Image: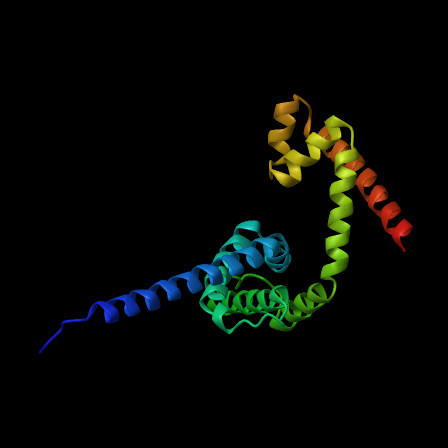
Length: 194
């Protein structure tokens, strides 16, 4: 057998490979752009269907791989977030069937109903989250730090109490007052927008 290539054949083959790599890189950048833009909503959606943040992270990892593997089937006219939500819902139900959520009392119908409701209300949820972040920034420093530690850093109340050298009851009271203040601020912003 003769395996010799001409310079033109070798050049053409390199051009084809180079073109494929560039296409893959463009496709990967496009995927990552959409994925990163929607990650927070995807995570919150998964977290709303699962008992813990760790479960949601596990689901998002599985879904991320599936989204990338199937990205070549995604069409620009499609809604990336709706596509991702569908995959998250499927993965949550798969986990439930495998027994990862067997101790949970909710049926598949419940998960489907909650997921569909969340999908419909994504814009409203995003708007409320934006208002929440704005209101969080307006809090006095001590209140803002308390909310940040508890809900953004997931530090438990016992640890916060230890850090503040306060009783757990005091921490719960402060959290309650701060949440009420945040709720009032968010509701005020929503009513202004309506």
